[in-house]
Image (cartoon, rainbow, N blue to C red; front, side, top):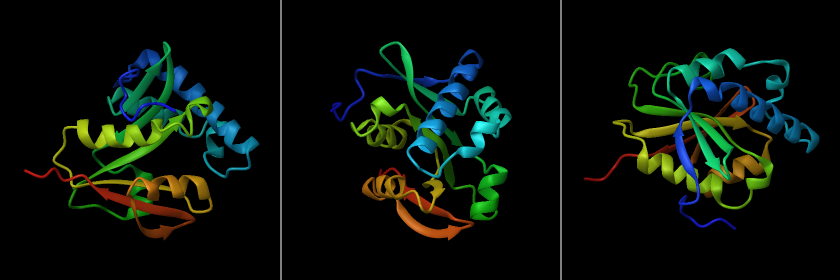
Length: 173
């Protein structure tokens, strides 16, 4: 098990030099999920989202987690809705949410507390005036849905086979 803190990891904003490694890592995880009969991210295997991933990196919205001198995890946080977010959530005219996309860990780092630690890190370290973190995942991905529920995300709906979750990140003064 990893400790609850992230002392042995470096979390930083991804650079354009990281783009090909991030895309390759996400595709390897998509293959792993397919091989383990997990219905999530199969569109990545056909190059779906490559441009969106590169744009999020260029916009400084994607983070990498380094461990043992390699990228072991990544995630993207959007301050404004993507087209997908608008489809799933509807237009968010309040702009009071961060949208979490592509939280991914290489399989050897799964089930060791790193994912939960990253969610806590996001909540505690992202400077934002936002009130919520919102995300979605495939509704029949039982393990991923359980992961978000265990990490205190509230299931608030279903749209096109995707469960919608949010969590308050309002900092108490």
